[in-house]
Image 1 (cartoon, helix red, strand yellow):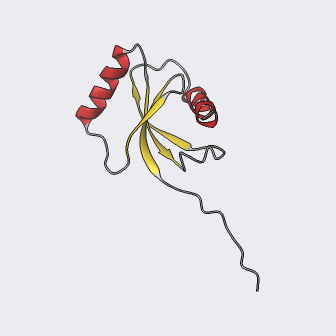
Image 2 (cartoon, rainbow, N blue to C red):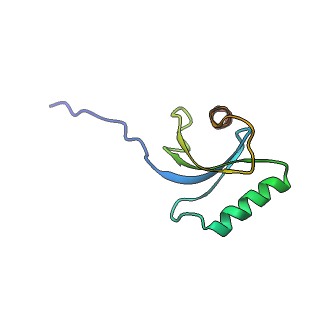
Length: 97
């Protein structure tokens, strides 16, 4: 008898702040950020001269060969670049680790 093996992929979801240059930080998995937390994130980005997006990232963050799926929740500041360009930069950063 042959047993077929399948690779199980994580479908983990996490909140992520993605800047225009692909830098990012995860901000949790268990609960949605509050409006006050989102305002604080936007203020912190602006203080560093940055803008970006609040996004939901789906996939295995640590499986660098497998791209993650990022979904925009809202802009933080005025990004001025395409979300797809920031996602491409994000994937380059992930794959270089």
